[in-house]
Length: 327
Ligand code: NDP
Image (tube, rainbow, N blue to C red):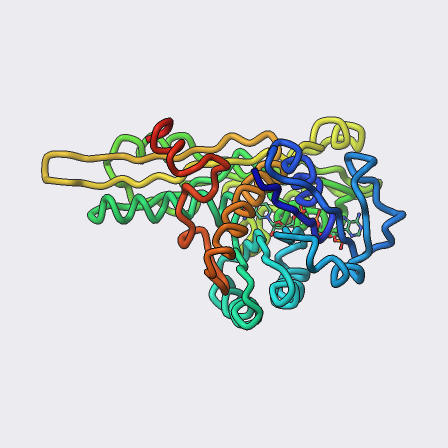
């Protein structure tokens, strides 16, 4: 069969995950990593993986079938997405939910004009959870959709904790509330307040002279981030933080509960338990790169989302094999 040639643009947690994921897909080959930093400063997982500066991307236009954009959603993708979609077929994991419509528009035109296919906002949320929310709504129109996240490390909330005066280091975990999940799973379609659905747990290293009670108060009352939740704050040592909180676990549940008649409730649930959020997200991006490569060959140009991709295109198997084996 044919080999799909993959490039990685940006080498952080997600970029490393893509490098690992390409290894697991026999029909793919990694052309190289492209970074804004000096290539010599990067240590790829596999020493033989070529590393280039982002400036060298143009020279690889004919050598890359799909470029996987691994920059951050806040600063990198709004700038890199439209630019790179003019030159390459792309896949990204843009996850600022409120900005997805405008990001879609910004990528659509350059991709369309240059006969490229740009799949935006893949991953797990947005991504696999989004697909399951659509299935849920379409199959059970008389129903309610519930998304629970965690237990997982939240990058944004961890950053917010670290900015509190007196905090030397720390992480924040989001936890789904078990009583709330149990109620939803029962099919009773509860109305749940923000505070009832999730709790937050912080592990904080204090600066030398910091006052624990003041730090705790500053965290639990922080507007938007913590004030609408019940938050536990644990003070730990720098050694404990380094030893016990380096992994990036995450996951959650996308649940649709609906009624198909006055007699019967139905519950659909999709759940993820992830030891590594970036490695799983990268695995999703790589599967979507296969689909993007195929859609581009079918002249399906412009920006796309996971809603526009038929599931069979994600698989390395042929449509006939899928019918025989998985239907
Ligand atoms: P990182 O901060 O690790 O990396 C982002 C970019 O920063 C990299 O592409 C890299 O670009 C640069 N960078 C990385 N490390 C360094 C460093 N040590 N010094 C200087 N620059 C560095 O972010 P993640 O990889 O963890 O996440 C990327 C995005 O993925 C997130 O913003 C999030 O939006 C998205 N995401 C989406 C999910 C979903 O379900 N849809 C789930 C998880 C994440 P360069 O190499 O060019 O310098």
